Length: 327
Image 1 (cartoon, rainbow, N blue to C red):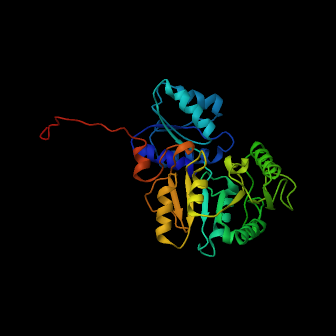
Image 2: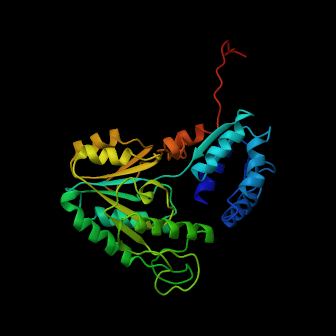
Image 3: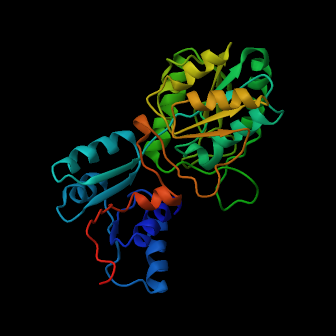
């Protein structure tokens, strides 16, 4: 619903008609959204909902001559395919794609920084493109950070939404569950140190697409779990020795959506933020300001959603000279 409103509402505000094609494995919130717009009295034809898969329906929208723009949220692979399909008709393509955010924790970070970062990684069962899935920790506090992150994982409950209490739920599909399991096993096989979680269903769960909150330590940035977007509750912890090394590791990724910085040194915070190659940088747990846009660079796409920039994505500019002010 969040992704839908970030596209449909700005499109309508900008004066566009639109066609929404939700993910075929998570369409129900979009069906509800269509009912909301219908009951609100939106004129017929302004908003249209078409269900189907990417290969069948998405590809037709990507090449349709009457579609002027595509705003897409999803995988980098699909974003590349859409861009190529849209090229022949010169559509505007706005992509909000994956991420592999680095959370740089310096030795002087506040006491809650590591727990906050691990918890953020597990939000939404790890299915967030802006999740801080690589935690870079200064070596002098590295062992304590690993212990704290492991404790957060072990205390994170996993259960159905029908059950009371605070916990994370399942991932979206069997295919996604299997992908996450394969990547966790890949981390083990490549020599990362598993300190919490692992493969298989969580304790007390005997069915469903539930994933154990997982933490790897002693990860090197060339490992698969540090390179690929897992899109599950899996945290990789990497040590660093200097500010320069931390920045180098953080930027050594195809992605560039959100990075995070934890330090009480304001000058260092500002200095590091300027050097991180990402569309967003959040520091010391401070969220982005009201009206700021969401979006990245590199393989994360270059969409901007929200705020004035999110509105402008759905507009074309027009320059007119010789305007008659008296007419």
